[in-house]
Length: 326
Image 1 (cartoon, one colour):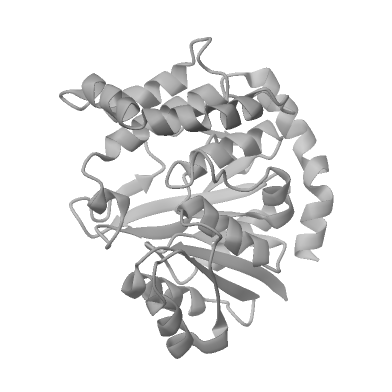
Image 2 (cartoon, one colour):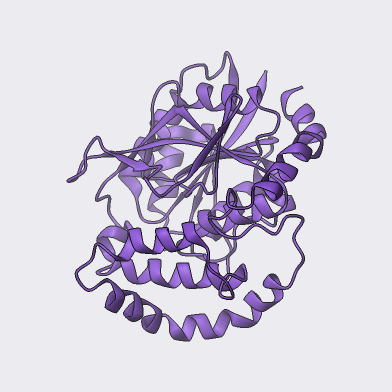
């Protein structure tokens, strides 16, 4: 039977995390089509969630703590102790549908050129209840044969192979430990020659206004977005040229705000000390020669490079694919 490890990163979200775990453990096909190893990576400052998990789930859920708090550190810690070649990251404010896991495994198995996979993320509750969170209009897609390739998968729910995740170095705990981790990881997947795919048959629900969500506890979330966009542009050497889709993404995030350019400047200014502190680390990364010199959100811009990446992806993933599905 196929086994998959699913990592749930969390921070001070006891009730919502328990609800997410209930749905994962009740997934259609669990115990018959596949076995799930459920791992909670918790950076809460107390043991309330650990105690609740032990009381409610016993040994059905593995509990672990990262070496430092942060979403990237949480996910890396969960992946580190995962025992399966198949790895799924599911944020603690994400609720799956009964067939989400089975659809994920089917989609991943059906395309041997897929290294990472995401699906529809739909808002649950809040002002946008029932609307699509991801993908958004600016998230480009390119359909080839039966696969829909995407330039980035923004965390929330992400399926991959553990050896691929380890090969690219996991999530960045220095620059993107608190947010933006999916944008950065997606770029490194493509630069290493590991394609990302969007499978619309996979559906999950993003619970709005959960306690301690960034949208709730941060007054200006756009300030964090401004910081992330600058770091991504710098890390992947995008400040020397014009990149149309990246520019469109910046516009989508800030042009609609009455004082968008001001908010972007404020965001960079508010994080200037952090940006300056990690610059040496970014410099070390940006000068490493990639297998494919894709830029953030510009994977489809260079068709020759994209075609070359896809043509070799099957061979690059062959041994990993065989081991995961044996």
